[in-house]
Length: 259
Image: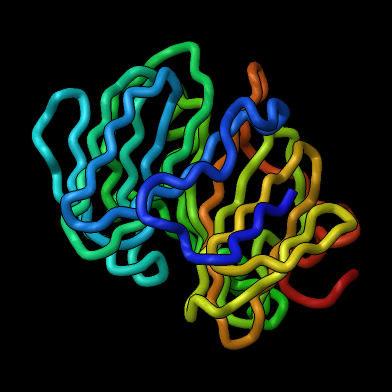
């Protein structure tokens, strides 16, 4: 499912999807756009992650002091992410002219310590390098996964797709549901998202809900870098690990021509 955004996100919180709207997905996503002095308080009974897309905000959680964080844009710097268990109180305060925070959520029966992930803690990889004449080389950032945060319900990261190139490639799928949320540089850009046999055109602020088992390769239009946040929900007894690549295209993982 493609949730289009025809206009910029307004000031305040915009709900894109919640954990109950699509039970098969089970992931909530909202965008918090803040100006100086704006404040957002959240004490939801869900696991949550607050990812700073750009701008300056102050974060406080678990009754602690405020921590100022800043990110000029999602293309040149890895993210700050606050990850908290159900019921933890989070206070977000705008401290600059414009800030975007993506708020993610999922149901969680257990608990874990709250943690603020700093940009330097994000694992960054140049995937696709050395294959396909670099047409699918991209930057993949992983904030936390089943190895680094085994008590979480979510896996969270980002991808930078270079202009005119592919990502989430070769086409792959997994049983665990996923969401992609997009930004472009320049913001007038666009790209394409495959959803099995369907293709949707994504723009600034688009969100795509990826059902279990649906392959989802991506492509950025020439001239436009494409950033997307990706968040996956573990299934009970079946956490996300390695995706399944479509057999017809798995050869593209290897250097050289098809065998």
